[in-house]
Structures are given as structure tokens and as C-alpha cells.
Image 1 (cartoon, one colour):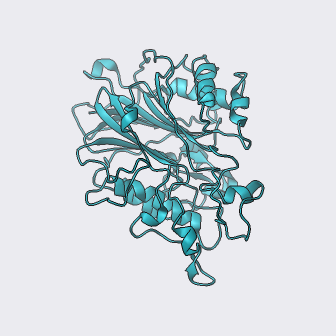
Image 2 (cartoon, one colour):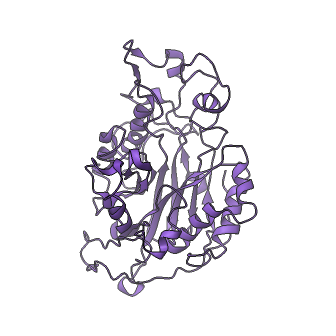
Image 3 (tube, one colour):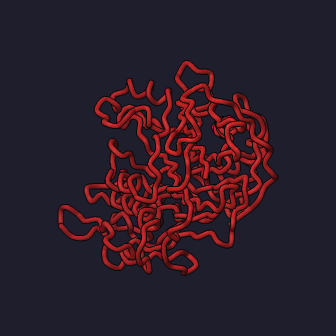
Length: 417
């Protein structure tokens, strides 16, 4: 399902006082640790960079239509903070995770018109996107199967959510929304909502450790979908050329049992992108329109989303995200960072044993789990990153008042090509 909104105004650029590097060095990156005050000065380049971002917005509701009701009066405090952050960072192309899907696009309309296009306290002025993409996801869509092996199908609350193709209390919960200043080639979008997990060569089939047998019976395994929400390849006609925006939101590798079914699924949801951008036969990798194969070798792309996997800390099979980060087609660049994350990482029981750099974290998940790097913007080779950041101001900064609209923080990257 695709809809369009009003056109986007020009963006205000401000020069960062941090890490000024020469544009002539293709491998150089300017990093602004706070995330909202950095912009590459227009006078320093012939072409303005493409600012790409990902943001898990926590804009969901437990009841069907609940997000529309939340947003209707324009006064939802969480949505106002999310909009304020977007107004400050002003990405050209952004993925919003955990934004409930509705077929009419009513929630997206409300968020765009009543929040983004209205100046928010702490924001940077009205922000409009002419183009957007939204489509159905697997969360909350009942499978008609006993996916949690509790002996019943469906039911109420979590029991019902556990038997959906992707966990959710109603269809569309925790959906995705892409907003863009530049045209989206809707006819060329590829979605992988229906792709079967068992179709993936070498898929990590969950095993019950008490029996040594597969967790899912054969008839269930053969039907189970890989993507907990969906995987989208959204081609965008940016000034830098066609950019394939590869977006997803893999399931968290927790909330399961010793069979680690969510951990296995998270691994393979991330692996889908590694396979998609790799050469070779991909006859199994078929989109929802029946077209099979991966991304052409010469295509420019940016992978974005809350991938629910930290390279070093927390739950999950870390090799999945490390493989993606180190993929030959993914550009090596300085990891986006923030002063706020570095500060927050120095406290809290959950952070004490973490091995990764606290400054790279993109969300805070309570005293037990601590802070993790879960959100990514990963460009392909051929781009030149010129600035990056995570919107996570220090606790004593005035901007901290708008940064807690979600337990995740917005991650952005400025790219030239």
C-alpha cells in the first residue's frame, strides 16, 4: 500500500564544529556525536549529501486502530517527541520501525500532517515528505498454526500473538513506514513478506534441546514465513542516482525458550540481506510477486533498520550482524556515535560487562539488558560518508527532553556518490 503527502521544503544546513575533514579524502568521515547539529556545508560540495536515517519510533498500540486514535488530536506526547527529533535531523530518506500499519494509511497521514508538518517544541520547524511507502507486514496476522507449541491455536493476548506469522496483537502492529523527499519507484519495489523460512539454503531450523528434534513439525516448518514483519527493497530516485533502500525489522532474539527459535529467526532475517546482496544463484529468493534473485551487482543500496542484534553484546547470534557489517559490498565507515550513549554506558548494571563501545549504542533497554547497538544505516561501496550521528544528547543537554520518545535513538548518515 503506497500513499503520497505534500512536498518537502528545503533543508537548513549548519556546519558542525566537530571533526572537520577534507572532502577530497574519499575514506574520511565527519562524525557529530550528538547527532542533530551536524550538516555538511553546502559550500563545501558541488552536490549536497543524501541524509539517510533509521528510527524505531515505538508508535504502536496493542489494539487494532489504536495508533490512529493516539494520533488523532495531534497531542500524543511520544509522537510529538519523535516528530521533533525528525525535524531536528531532517533526513531525506528515513525508515520508521514500529509504526503500526493500516491499509488506509490513516496513521501515516496523521503523523505527517498533525506532527511532522507542525512545529514541535524542541524541533527544527515543519518537515514534509512528498513520497512514502507502506505495505502489509506479518505481525499479528494469524497463521492458523500452533507456532509456540502450547497445544492451542490462537487464543487471547500473547498466546494469540505467538501464533501469528510475526508476533503481534493485531495485524500491522510494529509495522514499517518509509518517508522520502525523492520519488519512490513503486512499480519496482520488492517485498518479501511471504518468503518461506525453509526456502533459505542452510536455514537455522530451531531444535528442541530436550528431544533433539526440530521444534517445528515438518508441516509447520514448510509454511513458516522468514520475515517477522517484512523485508522491502524500495528503489528511490535520489540526486545520487537510484538507491535501493533495503529495510526490515527482524524479530528480537529473545522471548522464546531453550530452542532459541527467535534467535535463529533473527539470524536468518539478517542473513537474508547478506544473501540478497551477494553474487550467485538466488532462485530460492523470490519476492511476493514471484520474481526471484538478488540485487544486481552494480546497484547502489543502503540497508537500514532496527536489526535487533548488537555485534558484541546482548542476546542473539552476533555472527549474523558481523557478517553483514563485513560484507564486501557494504562500505566500511566510522560507526555513528553519540555523547549521550557514551555517558549512559558508564552507569547501569546491564552495561557493566558489555564489550562493545558504549558510544555506538542506539537504544536503552533497562537495567538488566543495558544499552545496545541495534539500529543501522549501512551504505554500499561507491558512497562517500561525510557525516554521521546518533541523536542521543547528554543528560544535561536541553535536547535530551525530546530524545526519549522511544527506547531507541535515531541513527543517520550523510552520503555522497
